[in-house]
Amino acid sequence: MRSIWNGAISFGLVSIPIKLVNATESHSISFRQIHASDGGRVRYRKVCELDGEEVPTAEIGKGYEEADGSIIPITDEDLAQLPIATAKTIEIVSFVPADQIDPLQMDAAYYLAASGATAAKPYTLLREALKRSRKVAIAKYALRGRERLGMLRVVDDVIAMHGLLWPDEIRVPEGVAPEGAVSVREAELDLADALMATLGEVEMDSLHDDYREAVEAMVAAKAGGGEQAVAPGPPAEGAGGQVIDLMAALENSVRAAKASRTGAGSPEAEGDGAGAEVTPIRRKGARGGAGAGAAPKAVGGKKSTASAAGGGSRAGAGAGAGAGKKSTASAAGGGSRAGAGAGKKSTASAAAKKKSAAAAVKKTAASAKAAESKPARAAAKKAVTPRKRSSA
Image (cartoon, rainbow, N blue to C red; front, top):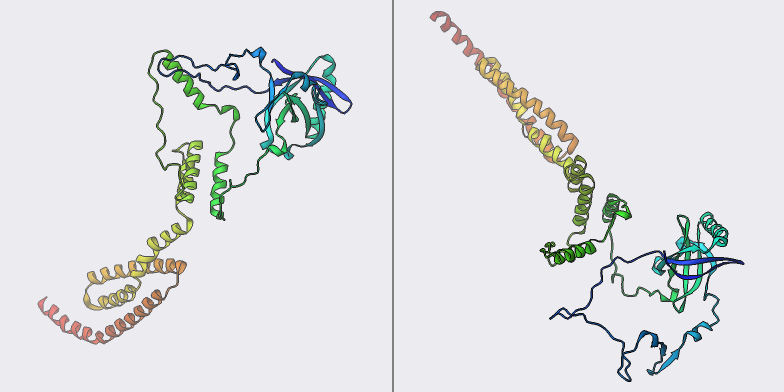
C-alpha cells in the first residue's frame, strides 16, 4: 500500500515512526460530462479572471478571501512556519473507553504502519497496551493543511486511526424529531422486538452495492451493442407514504421475515403466521360456543318430556314406538349432559336457568298426565284381551 503521510506517534516520551495508509477505497462509478448533441467531452479550464488566460497547475497558489471579497495570498512557507507540534506528529492526548466516542464524529479511516525496524518494538507495545486496556487513544495530527482530531484503535494486529470531527462541527438536531407527543403501545413495541429478533444478524461481507452492479451491467451491455436489461419499475405512488395500520404492517413484516428465513412453506413459518392473526381468546370462544355449548342446551328441555313419553309408551302404545322414543330420550339425555358440562365451563347465564325451570314444569305436567291415563289404559287392556281369545 502506498503511504500518504509520514510522521511519528508521540506516546509520552516514546516516539514511534509510522506511515499513514488509506484504509478504505471507493468503488463508486463516476461519469464524464459530455455534449448531449454530439457526445463531445465537456472540460473545465482554470482561467485567470483578470487576463482571461488559462493558468497551469504550477502557477496556482493559495489565498484567503475576506468578507469584503479581497484575497490575501498564503504561501507554503507561511504554513510551514506555523508553531504546530502536530505538523509531523500524531500526538496522543488521552485514552478513553470506545463507547464515549460518538459515531457521528467519525470521518476517514487510516492504517498506521511501523516505519523501519526500530519502530517495531514501540509499535507493538502501544498495540498491546490498547488491547489490554480495552480503550482507544485520542490524538491530534495535521494533514492537508489543517489540524485534525483522531482516534487510534486496534484492528487485528494493526493500529488504525479514524479521523474525528471536532465537537463544534457536529450540528444539533433541531427540528428533526417528530413534532408533538407520539405514544407507542406495548403491543407495538413487542412486535417491533419480534421483527428485530426475526431479522437477526447479517454477515457484513454478504452485503454489496446492487446499484453499482446494475450500472456496470448496463454499461457492458451498451458497449457490446446488446439490449439493456429492463429493471423493475419504481414503486407506485403512496406505497412508501403514511402507514395506515402500524400493527398490521408489523405483523406482515414479521411474517415475511420468518418466511424468508425458514421458507414460505415450512411448518414453522405457517404456525407463526397463524398465531399472529387469531388470538387465543377468539379460538377458545369458538370451540366453547359452536362445538359443545349451543346444540346440547337446545335439547336440554326435551329430556324430561321424552322420558315421560317413554314411560307412557312402555305401558300401552306399542313396543316399536316406545323403543324409538326411548332411544331419542337416551340420545337427548347424553346430549344434555354434554351440553350441561360445556355450559358450566363456559358461562352460568340467566337464560340457562329459565330453560331448566321450564323443563321441570313440563316434567311435572307429563308425570301427572301419565298418572291420570293409567286406569283408562288398564280398562282398555281388559276389554281387548277377551276379543283376542275368542278370535283365536
